[in-house]
Amino acid sequence: MSPAKKSDETADSKAKTSQFAKLLDAAEPVRLKAGEVIEATVITKSKSELWVDVGGLLTGFIPAREVGESGKVIHDIKVGDTVPASVVVPENDEGYAILSMKRAARDKVWTTLEQRFSTKDSFPARVVEANVGGLLLDAGGVRGFLPVSQLAPEHYPRVAGGDRDLIYDKLSQFIGNDLTVQVLDLNQVENKLILSEKLARTQETEASLSKYEIGDTVKGKVTGVVDFGVFIN
Image (cartoon, rainbow, N blue to C red; front, side, top):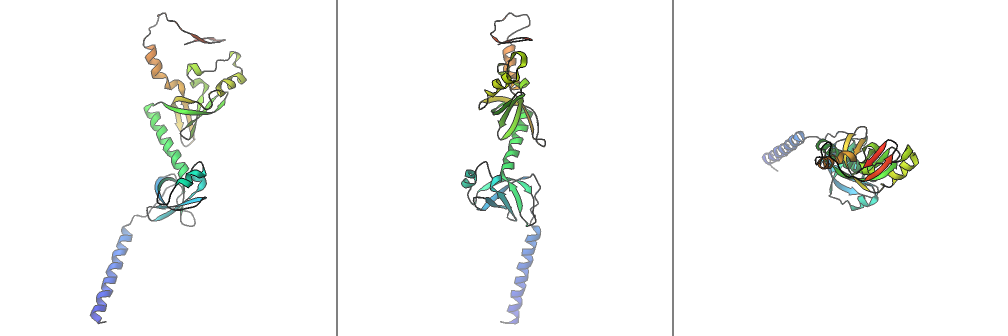
């Protein structure tokens, strides 16, 4: 090989190396923050875990318990799928991120709940538990509390003498049913969600009451009698 040709190849090699170095310098490093929701691509999977690629520069790990509510969810995910995940640990000692799809789903629900709180939208939520103080509802994966005082009038447990066992029996009848509610108060950091069925009825109630004026004589059906008065529909 002639000295001239060898010199040209060396110069070409140096130019390519320099170009590659510039590309690396220009590439933005992936910097994750705990709690951040990202999109990741599944690169491999097993029954117990998912390994994902984040931006082509970082590998993430999702344990099966953080994928979904059951093993069926991880079974349905395929290599190459893009999944939303919340960052639990940005980078551990081994150099990869620990992620959670469950948390990402919950964060999305909280965002929706905050929007509904802002716009005062009503929505259905499933009653999952009851106690003498009220009902626990599932609002898209987030548990919310509906105090007895925030039940609609027709659902209020009217019990003479305030017998706690009878109140619990009446409230337990709602388990498994959907109630239309509004968000009364929420705080994601404290995992607090307070719901109101009575508030959700506000517009409907106002429309009904707009037909009446003080002093009008109306007919109604007695729906409950207690020590302090009578409930009429």
